[in-house]
Amino acid sequence: MEINNFIKTIMEEDLKNGKVNEIITRFPPEPNAYLHIGHARAIITNFELADSFDGKTNLRFDDTNPVKEDQEFVDGIINDLAWLGYRPENIFYGSDYFEKTYEKAILLIKKGLAYVDDLNQEEISKYRGTLNEPGVNSPYRDRSVEENLKLFEEMKEGKYADGEKTLRAKIDMAHPNINMRDPVMYRIIHTTHHRQKDKWCIYPMYDFAHPLQDSFEGITHSLCSLEYDNHRILYDWVIDNTEVEHHPHQYEFGRLNITNTIMSKRYLRALVDAKKVSGYDDPRMPTLCGLRRRGYTPNAIKSFILGTGLSRVNSTVPEEELEEALRNDLKMSALRPNAVIDPVKVIIDNYPDDVIEYLDCPNNAENDELGAKKISFSKEVYIERDDFILEKPNKKWKRLALGVEVRLMYAYFIKANSVEYDDNGNIIIIHATYDPKTKSGTGFDERKPNGNIHFVNAKDAIPAEFRLFEPLMKETEENKDLDFMEKLNPNSLEIKEGYVEANLKDTKELDHFQFIRNGYFVTDKDSTKDKLVFNRTCSLKSSFKL
Ligand code: ATP
Ligand code: MG
Figure (cartoon, protein in one colour):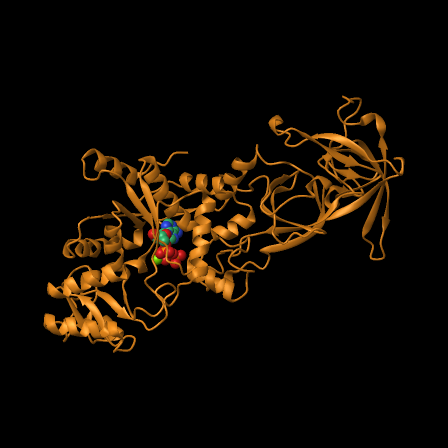
């Protein structure tokens, strides 16, 4: 799928008019959390747009707030980007520009366009005014250039405590856009930075640092989500007043929301901290590492994102569209082994005791190119408990029942004759007989079975745990006004036991499968030699009308 949207049109025009010679974009995450599926929209938009013009995209860590940032997140973000298949032209850090950014602040002071303010945060907010009322000038607004230079130098040297002073742009306290009412450009933070360590105790604000970084890197189109719309005027002010050589431009696009999915970092962090999930890569998390572990593929994520389109409006997309993208990606390419979830044993009384047969079976019944394999069969097999009922209830029951004959897929017809119970009254063994004439592949057509069910050979099947998921959060009419922690779905994880066919003995983490009749699954890193673990990515069909 090719990217096509309003920003692409702008880029085409800019190239045609000679406004730019090439397209250079950047993806600028703050390394304070793992990336989520919403970030995938920003990543894919930036990389695909630049790629479509043979342009370049930088990864730039927006690490100008030392309080929340961490190397763990830097590594996670680099890894997620590579997994999605994107290679940044450069990896830059906003903090590497601190010196140049500082020089631009000095320049603004010298031009009379910035001043050191003694008001604290609360006072600054109070003086700022509202949408209907102009703000009030700070009493420190008219300090001389010399005094401002001296105070700013002292801020940098660590003479003042956090919050004691700020550097503010001197623009217009009555400006109709509140972001232009003398925005703070630098604040004091005495916290060790993950890269700069204790070199700095003044840190530039996003609105000052970001346009400068874009300019230093020669970014032509600086793409961001819609909430920065009313910061664009300040972005341009910074560019226009700092005597930079290169003038980048900001364009906004709508944020991506997905039903039953909260994507803000604050939420993801709260879930991890409260141990509601096993970590950022819990398969229920909308993080890229969680989706990967859940079994989503880069292709599925890309086609999902491109399929949502891009406009200047925030959009909410049904979660089922992501599942559909995965099915489309894996339907023809995934192997389709047998897995029996919640098993019950079938003993085929008329089958010889010590024989194991190896029967032919396609790897993917819809795609011959994936070839064939052998599946084993013997006197004892497992089928799913749900595939058996004592008495056939109606015509629609196309599975096994007493006195009823079904086909074990790619093997034989079997008929159930009796059952054995454990002390609690649960069926533990079904006794059956098979008909040797009905062997699969022989063209037997004298009678029709009451359905086709899958099985695994009890003699060599591998024990497995299956993790089945529902959304972490479920929004209903009743809970829609509650805090998200109270919307958590108590059934978001269900663990089931069972077996997979012996062919899966060498499966590795992140192998994708379609388990026959059960859905798409992926091998989890918790797998051991004795017990495999699989996550269900999604079911075979959507219950939802797309
Ligand atoms: P959050 O709101 O989850 O904390 P953020 O926007 O603060 O995310 P950043 O690390 O600043 O996170 O994001 C990097 C880029 O990803 C930004 O350009 C941001 O606009 C974009 N982005 C984040 N979430 C979404 C989303 N849901 N849809 C589209 N773009 C997004
Ligand atoms: Mg942000």
